[in-house]
Amino acid sequence: MSKDEALHLVFGVFGNATGLFLFLSPVYGLPFISKNNFLVSAINGTGAAVESIYVLIFLVFAPKKEKAKILGLLCCILSVFSVVALVSVFAIHDAEKRKNLCGFAATIFSIIMYASPLSVMRMVIKTKSVEYMPFLLSLFVFLCGTSWFIYGLIGKDVFLFVPNGFGCLLGTIQLILYAIYRNTELGENSKIITIQA
Image (cartoon, rainbow, N blue to C red):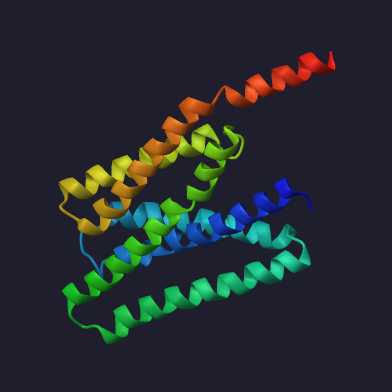
């Protein structure tokens, strides 16, 4: 396995893990935890379905060794999620405490998800290339983080505006890095073509 393939796999696994945490969060917006949260529940429910399909496709086509690692990671993630969900539903009867526990857990998972590109951003700075940081992904991290940050601020929901404010900031940094280094790869490739010609 080449260095690029190894990095690709590592970031894919980390992205799947953090994305799964994020998209398993619809339970945090369900009516028995927090009322009037239809928009949050709808998008997270859709995200959970889509991300589950991604994980399933990965598990079907992954090599046996990688499949075992991902299944182990998936079991750990589902265990943590199940503990939080079960404790909030069965052990905590006060609605405000339940909302705080689930909101805190969702905030942690969301920040982890938004922080997952930090190592890619480091690589962009180090290599001066945006090869591993697609523009559309960076753009939608920014747009999604910004939208939910504003939504959370307007609704005075700390569990929405804190992690999404973090996402907005990281999305902004990614777009700035993309603007700085977007032509680097093109320039290097044109030099290679010139030398080969």
